[in-house]
Image 1 (cartoon, rainbow, N blue to C red):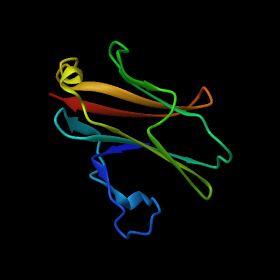
Image 2: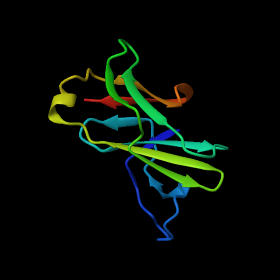
Image 3: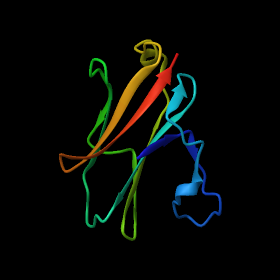
Length: 120
């Protein structure tokens, strides 16, 4: 699990590859795009992948979805990516240097977290 700014199919083969996620990092500014990415290996069949993004200090929930925005099955597992472009309303809810947790679950069981900071 990680965060980055965007995904580009660099070799145009239609397959997601880890090196095609651009500008991986753990700190973002409010005005830049945030893409949250989970890689779930070893799963088969239909999955119900959920994503919750919350502030660590007070558990304020910014995203809670019953499905990650885009999930793609590849051979031995799944890639899940969610683009989060903060609305003007979302931006007012941030403090300076908020630590957030992105928590992915499959069928209701947590499978991993990614911690990142959003700066004003």
